[in-house]
Length: 338
Image 1 (cartoon, rainbow, N blue to C red):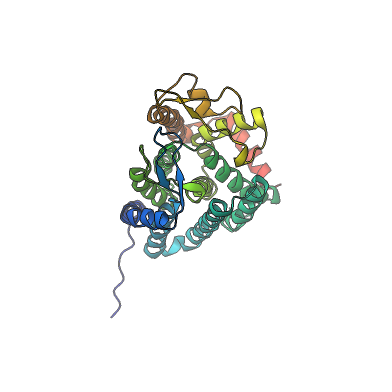
Image 2: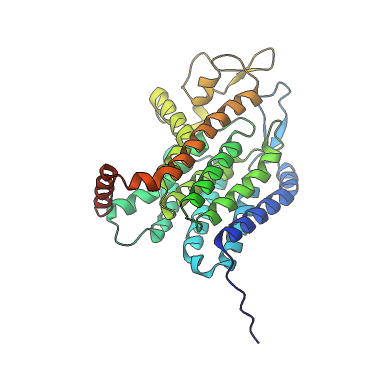
């Protein structure tokens, strides 16, 4: 006799996925850290006066927790199997590229191209009847999104903390708009990042590496296109976008080896170098400041844009009724067909 269980509401499935991804990352990270240290996959924390040696490539734990969360979502909701599998494939490919970059150090061009290839499967989750321009934009967006979340990095907890803020905003926004299906994706990543932050916050026991930072941006872009919340995703990514624009404007495309790191003064506070590129972190460091306080300021900036994203989601249904915006939406739909 076959027992057919009733279909659980999507928000319940999303909560379960988030809790499981949190538990998997939280429980696996101590062992992952020990394995990384044993394999000598470590680096110096240059923003501490005593220069502690810290495990790198901790993004393994984020990736592991996210994978389990998505698998559970696939198991609980058969209708969403296809888009969730597509997202899983994209994030796995991006994670592999992050692993290769952490171990072999890819050039900027190599990383951009490989991330573009990794974003191609997301095309199959695009809405029907869209044009070639829209489809080409998807892998470009994955590559750009992954790169900019990888660029605003280097301080304890800054990447994982901003990721938590972004996915919290996206989750709330999607719930407001009734897009409960993509909350499975956002909650799976959110749960993993919350667990990872425990080990990554000041003083960090592990760094995410490109393995962790790249998948954060890729997951945000996946939610943006599958959930059709591109404007909100753009808003929550604005701290990363601003940081990337400042760097490109002041220095163009730079390889990692060309970066001149933030320095410490005699009091153990962060100071920006007198010369070099501009960035959001260096803008915050106009005066010497402790690392954890600099991170908190960046988080506050992220929270401001995260709240704006939620506000946009809340007022969006009313805005769509406005005639001027309705005309704009028609133009947007025309661009989708190009």
